[in-house]
Length: 169
Image 1 (cartoon, rainbow, N blue to C red):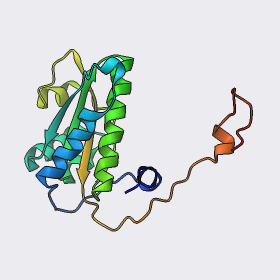
Image 2: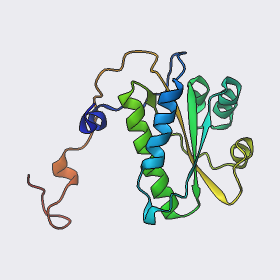
Image 3: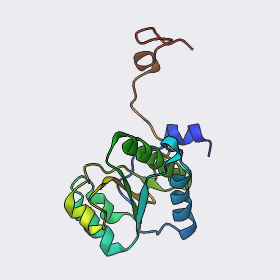
Image 4: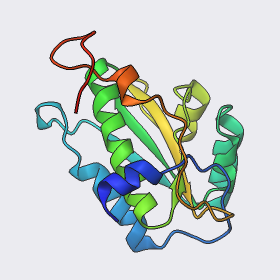
């Protein structure tokens, strides 16, 4: 899939069928994270892959903003240093994982507000690290087709040369 097509079509998927994600595709998704650029090439992130059905169920219970994790084939917790660069680098890795998954027909969605003691303890994450997000992955439980996105036009958000100057292609 062309990268721009993936960006244009990718949708947030919160409902999955029962198919497992094959090992080679799970590793490819993790490789996408590993290969992502990071500030000063520090690569100060860690990724916790969860595939066990009972552990996914418990993650869905603990992640109040992501109960649908319980129905995913797998989830990846993104762990970073608790500072702005950690957040940015982690987010970059997440986007790459999600795009690679989408290319394989696998949906995902960012689950936020997860840096909580119970979730960190469940995943054995050190206290001095931030649990940035948990991303559930799985095959969508229904056809999703090409994403239709409600986005502002470029004329409202893009500027030329300086803020406030209309963008012109």
